[in-house]
Image (cartoon, rainbow, N blue to C red):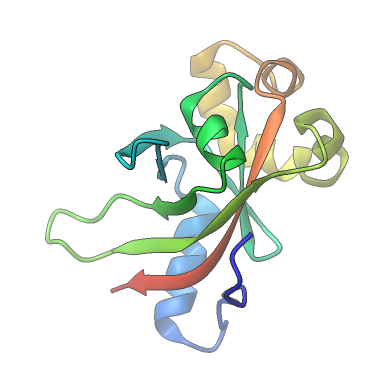
Length: 148
């Protein structure tokens, strides 16, 4: 993980409050890592904000997992509004969690289901099936926030 101290979003700072609201409600974020050849790799992901970090469930054999295992830095950014405001970009480190998705379910399952109920229905899979398929959890620990 990064040597920088983790970013703790301040619930008294209006910009941080807006970012926290988006992290709790936005369904898709763009997760960016760096490949071994130095080129960027960006993919849309479901994520869950938990204890000052984003949790991203993944299949094990993906480029993002390989990049994280190699120690790639990470970005998680959310869509902006049409006028260009509503920017939320988190920069930091990422690591593979010691816990699988199914091991995280007792702690986050209910809230994760509430956030992604419509998406899971559209995807055609319930939470347990998703946790089995996407059993690797990437923990994104931000050290910097860009938001406006």
